[in-house]
Length: 130
Image (cartoon, rainbow, N blue to C red):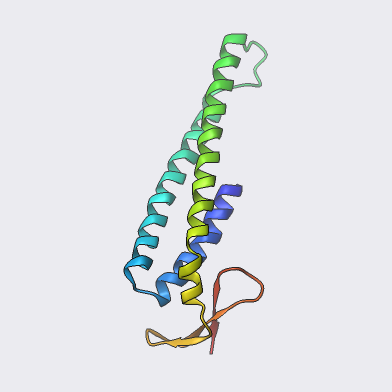
């Protein structure tokens, strides 16, 4: 859940950057976010599959099966933790692009009805209707 929430929050920043910046750096950030999103989907799916593969509540669970389940679940959780760390590093790398996108409030020719303004309540950029 935390990984999904962090990914969703970062997606807002990526969408903002994409809306106001068409530089090669912004396009690389978008491509990097997409690749990271695919990896997160894979490790999340693997974790869910691992949880579903083991019935840990059954009474006749033997020690060997419990040990295998623990090993597989630990590995899947470690992969989720790595993906979360990668997401945090990626998010930190967006600072310059977010700063560039958020300098003042400027009208964008593609979206004449909106202004892009830095919100004092969140660390990313928000759209405000003009």
